[in-house]
Image (spheres, rainbow, N blue to C red):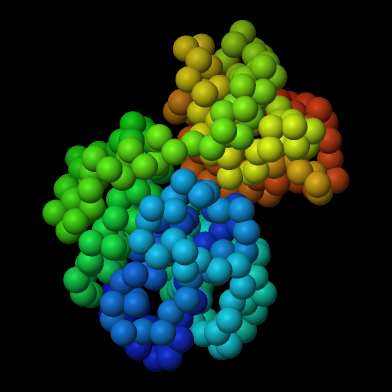
Length: 312
């Protein structure tokens, strides 16, 4: 805590950044940190390389302040929810970085690494840090709460414990609206997201006696539905929800290769993600591979699951 305080005091400008193709935890954590720094009177900007960020989060305080370029020169970088420096998408070589994260596979690339692999979200890590230094406002609490309920799938993930409900209660006491925030996040899907969900479910494949489910989304499907990458948020969880499924996988064709999302009901898939150059947590992860087709990537992942004995 003291080191964090000293570092931010030594900088005139701070840039808060989260990983490319951000999820609600990345956006919520970065906005919560941004709001807190702003309240300290610090010159701060919040950025993300991806132009297509989840629009259903536009109810969060300062959402409109998110830019896709870094304007400050020689600013301190505070990265949120990002396991490796290349996932930031920006050239930050030579800059000091404070790394706030909860990914088991975090590479600890900062001069200060505030990484808690057992935390349920990066917002949990950020909140516990900032509340020790100064008051956490309603704006920060709102952003942190949204991130918290997203990464815990509304408090249903396997890593939940009673301490998380204490944190949630504290955020509500600080002003986070525990009724309106989930309503905003659940009930504001785009039409394109529903179209691509239907197409994705039609592609459903089951393997190993229904223990593995696979969804495949090609570029043509994205174009015909009008969907963006951000519209795919949560779709892989539908494949995981089948009673027999232990591991769910979604393959998405991109202009340069394939983006893969992995989910499980308890099997540790972090090593599988790492093997293919990705990261994540024990039951949720992902990676991207260039210059490969969906069918080839699917075969490789299924083979690696077999080789590792993840499904018996």
